[in-house]
Image (cartoon, helix red, strand yellow):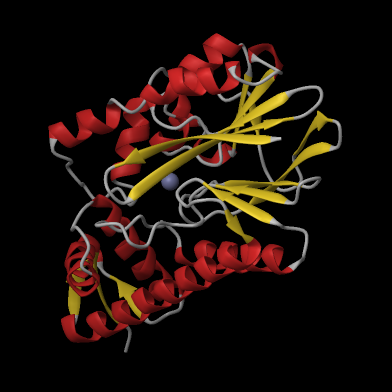
Length: 303
Ligand SMILES: [Zn+2]
């Protein structure tokens, strides 16, 4: 059985946290933001398995809105926290977490103190990750309920989804990025993002997936989720094409200039997430040999 707690974060953004219940143990997939801890405990209390059955919190990835209540829940439930290894240090050190989240390319981004305090308030307590998740990790919950881990990086460097085979349910985080938000939800590595979307598309075509439960979309059928995956693929390629067009017209430029062009073109906020997207596409073009990285964080077309 799978149950969920949902929170509306602003007008456009929904956030879902899932509890998977087997005959032996239960597993919480993500923990939302800090102040969702009480609501999640109430959801667990409402199940017949109760708190003692919850042995693991598994995080799809280590963004603040997916592990924000880990600390409280880990203490209350006495469970193990499992997450992809790439950003496990974000759980132990929130200052480093926020510094690397808001400036993934180490470009000297300064976030207004109010915004930084708001982000910090969504994280409860620093804690350790005891178990690392990757392709092939499995948790047997008893009674044929089995969570199988699938690596889906790109939105961040370490991200996983979980296929629950007996119900054909795919529980995923932010590989399904929000598209209709006022800011770029974003990704830090274009090639990894493309690969994960392809991988997700293959899983959805395999016939093994009957329902998809993403963190930021409602429950969907495989067909509905496929349509979203294809829309995200198209958006990534639109941004890639726009980056090339802008690079040609700008000549020599900084990542911030590219960020501003992309935000103007796509009607998104000129924020740190948008800068991460611009960086991801610039590095992709450098990797393809179409751009050259210059000193001082500038770029120009390869001739
Ligand atoms: Zn995320």
